Image (cartoon, rainbow, N blue to C red; front, side, top):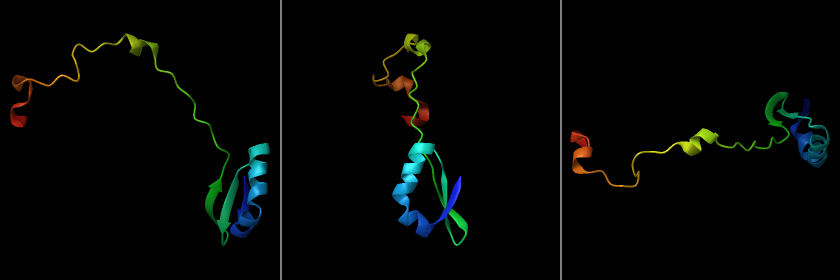
Amino acid sequence: MKSVNVHEAKTQFSGMLAEIEATRTSFVICRNGEPVADLVPHRRKVSMSPDPKLGAFKIGYDATEELGESEWPADAR
């Protein structure tokens, strides 16, 4: 991880991006010697597929059907 000050980051931003693309390098941007931000390579979101067992799961009721009076809790009627 390379450290650069804010002025360097502003003037060399395009070059920093090119270096990140080419080498996957990360940068720490500092102000007055103190770290302020990290400039890191983007990580692509990993596409996940659902567990096949979930496809076989069936609920035993219609979730969009209104509840009858007797199905509501007494304090919610």
